[in-house]
Image 1: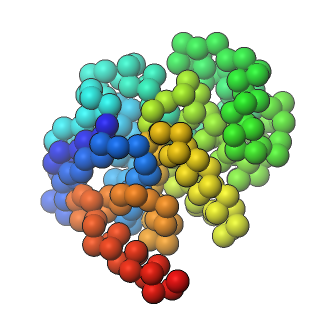
Image 2: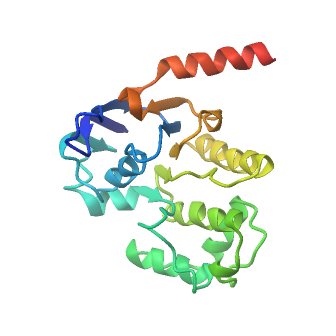
Length: 223
């Protein structure tokens, strides 16, 4: 479903090439310090960034060469400063705009169904500028689900959330996994990797089985 082979977004030798492969639906956490390429990985998965080296395959195709095809099958939530919603528009109008980009007419019924999936405590008529950070995150996730994509990408979904809010978002992401989707999210914090089936440690250049093993060991000790 998703493969990176010796991928680099900079010629700087301090950044290791990224190699990993995920073949099954589930949850992938891309982990590492700030400015190490986590968000670049997400953008590259929709063909928005072309790596300076290596190869990427998303759902069996090159996302740069088949960008339109990939965008029909991959949903991306908001990316701060890069891929942002229209805060002055209503939730519904943001859905209509996103639908237009996908070549899809969006009905109010579909919007209501998607918002119900995240138990939205706001109206589709509300403007995004009037919503709090958790509510905006819910909008971002549901916008990424428009068109029922196989792969869902979310940049730092737990940023600035309380512990209770984080558990709520974890529940949503686990629900998407149960639907058979592959969910990929980024994080700066190891403690936010609890729901990940696979961890991509950017600093190490690929899957960190050691990190998973350490986390699972600590969980068993705590229980």
